[in-house]
Length: 358
Image (cartoon, rainbow, N blue to C red):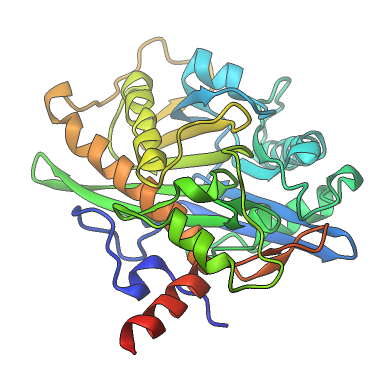
């Protein structure tokens, strides 16, 4: 089945203009790559977000992290929070593979630095995660250095969504979740800037699901009665990782404020941040780079005034909402470890279109 995005069904979340691809990579320089593991009991993977073409360790990105609910095992957030910078690409994977992916990412950055004549004595790899144990045999920790390097090797502006990479084994609102993305373009000071979001969706109770303002969760549960072995989620648990990139000039404090609005996008789909659902947001801007050397004693950075930041708030909320929906429509039907079936949102929407046309 051809992968579809939510707009392919005539559903348009929000009102702000999208970027060319309606994806994270609409922010110039940003690339995304996946490596998917599908073998025997393992259905998982890794997704990498490359913030730009040069060495992030040599010239850090202004960054921020926000933990809306801390039921998670992400790595590297403490330093991002303290220093307000990102010095490596970002990787997403499953919960028990964080350590192996962190080690691989550290090795890749060391190699890049050595090629650039740098000798890093401390590196802060950033790795996010979701628990994909309902589909993947997570204890086998099937993602390692080979898979991380493969994800980097294919990183590009065009990338797949749905059940790929770190989204291979995830579940969203009791349906198949995965990787999703969206972007918005805003105008500040007569110049256009892009805000892009990528999610690894793995949260939500089926009954709570809201589709562009319509409470469809109960209808999906009714639809489930017609399907054999269809799964559902009774609790909001499992987590969502949200990565936000922009070329808007911001301070780390402003970026964190914008990051918090991705939580609004989650709420628009029906999520309420349940106890077992870790909501972790990581963001960076390509506009303000921070040299890692010690030659500079003063830095000149640009930032927007606070009275225009609402435009970025709305863009972040809309992009997050749409990215979640894209993760669900692009994913294909997948069977869980106990034999249950996680349907794609696209299947429900296709059936609904058929019923409406009768």
